[in-house]
Image 1: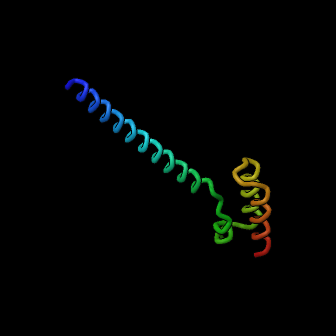
Image 2: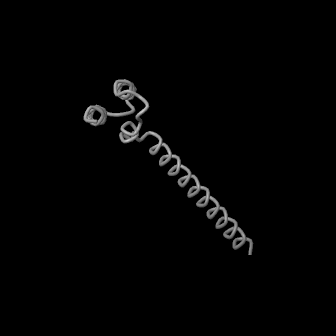
Image 3: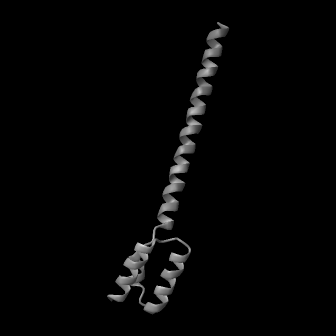
Length: 85
């Protein structure tokens, strides 16, 4: 009788641990996706921003390149789009 009760308690503890693990993994995945969308550089935003000059936009791109937010290839691609306007 007591052994059955111990098994039931262990079962509920196991279920609770699995619940906590799934919840933590889900939270981590949401945070990762949020960071990805925040750090993705959208080159089209630069093209649609008509209020600033092209040189200002290239300076901003260069700052992003220097801080390693974007790669050299992304910088060259965005710069080419700006200059082709």
